[in-house]
Each structure stands twice: as C-alpha cells, then as structure tokens.
Amino acid sequence: MSNIVEKNQNYKKFVLDSRLKYFKPHATEIQKSFADEIFSSLGRNSKFIHPKFFYDKKGSELFEKICQLSEYYPTRTEISILNKLQIELLSFLDDEYRLVELGSGSSVKTRLLLDVLSNQKTLEYFPIDISEILAESSEELLKDYEKLTITGIIDTYEGGLQFLKNYDQKKNLIIFLGSSFGNFAPVDGYKFLQKIHQTMKSGDMFLIGLDLVKENSILESAYNDSLQITSQFNLNVLSRINDELDADFELENFVHHAIYNEKDQRIEMYLKSLCNQSVIISKSNLILTLKKDELIHTEYSHKYRLSQIHDLLDDIGFELKHTWLDENKYFSLTLVSKN
Image (tube, rainbow, N blue to C red; front, side, top):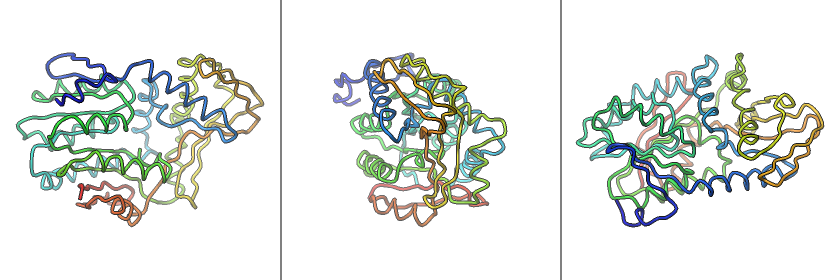
C-alpha cells in the first residue's frame, strides 16, 4: 500500500481478519457533514435532502426490497444484462484487475462480476459506500469466495476515489451500477465523471449502468409501487434525521410524491407536507417551517438516450469499448477506458 494512504490521518484502518479490512473517516467528520448539509439544504426556499442520505442501515434494507418489486424493473433488467455480458467483458480485461464498486450495491450484481475475475491469481474487491452496511455484505462474500480479499472504504464516492488514486498501481475495474448516476444533476454528474476519469490509470476500466428513456407509465409505476415500499424508503430519511440529528419530524404529516418530468427526462421524488408545520432539527441548529402541500425534493432519477450517453462519455475523454442492452432496451451498461 502507498505510504500516502498509510499516513493519511483522515482514514482509520480496521483489520477484521487477514482477508477483510476497511478504512473509515473520523465519525465526527461524517456527523458534522450530515448536520451541515441538512442545515444548508432545508434552510432555503426550495428545500431538498440529498439522496445519499437515504442509505442508512434501514434505508439500505428498504432499497433491497424495492429492487425485488415487480414494478421496479432496473435491478432485474441490469442483472439480466450482467448475466449475458460476462464472457464478452472478460475479453476487454487484458491483465489482473481489482473490482472497485461505487456503492456496496446488490450482492447479486457484485457476485456476477467477481465471477468474471475469479480465474485471476488474486481476487480483490473494494466497495466504496457512505453506509456501514458494506461491512455486513463483505462478510457474506468472503464465505463464498475463498481467495477473495476485501478493502472497504466507508466514505463518499469522491473521498473513496481519492483514496483509490493513491493506493497502488494495480489495474481497476470500477463499476457504478443501478441507476445511481441518474441521481446527479447534469452539471454535478459531469463533474463526477471527470473525477472518475482523473482517478483512473492507463488500463483501468469503468462500467456504468444507466436507465433509458421509456414509456411514462412504466417509469412512474417503478417509483410508486403498489406495496408502498418506495414511500417507506422516502420517508425513512426523515426518521434518520430524527435519530441522528435530534429532530422531531412527525412522519404522518408527510406523504411520498413521485412524478416523471418528460421534458427533463427525469423522475422527480418529493416529500409533501400535509399541513402547516414546524420542525426542530437540533444538531443542525435549524427550525424548519413548512406550508401545507410544500415539497421537499429528495431525488432526481434522470433517464438517458443512448446517443446522450455516448456523447457525454466521449466529451469527458473516455474511450468507448462497448454498450450492452436488454432485449426491451430499458437499461444499458457501458464499458469505457481512459484515453
């Protein structure tokens, strides 16, 4: 490991056994960031909560349930593509590669890609996630892959990528699956892709999942499921603020609200206030006042056309290797390298 990483005091190293370790920023810094961001995002006229805060332990568990819903097509569609691309993907990997995942994600998807790399002399997996749930999922993987070693990075994607940049010279296969990139506003998404591009070494690969434009009814059903799991997932972020920032949100005073904005090609998800109300968020030093029907924006999920995907990646400076689609052309997986 690079001396730069060993000497970086922003990371605490935890070695759980010879095959599993993880690095974690100081807990106080994470807590301060959460409180400060909530103060900033809810203390303005157009209120919002960043979607990265969905994923505490309960939020991550609820999202796993969402992925199994009949209406929520992205996960099963992406898995179907991963099942088909395994042999083709291997043809692009000309050396030993480490699997780096942005988000600890679904173990099903991770396993499919570990299987692609399993014939290598070494098998390494680096999950990067702000949620400590990655430690639990990592332990499950170790049971099924005897030669697997895991280095978890509990941090933001940007912080994890900076860590990776200074780690060593082994080639990385970086994956960003699901439709998580769609959560970024276009400008922020562009900057994030630039960050990934800057992190990559010559020979590194990047595999990104992107949800495609399709019929409005299919999109809106995916975010307004009949079992209301998505509603629970959306509302859970208020429970997290209550628990971690000493707030007094009353969840029964809010309702999940999701629509498709065809013009901007995105699902827009909100929490709607059902009455005039005030909420105290003690650790953010904020008294939040909401009117009846006022919206708190919690997520965008942008959808793309293939031409937009290829133009965007090309503009960043990536070299397009291949794009895989499902038979309905609902979803895409695109592999690129650094020019």
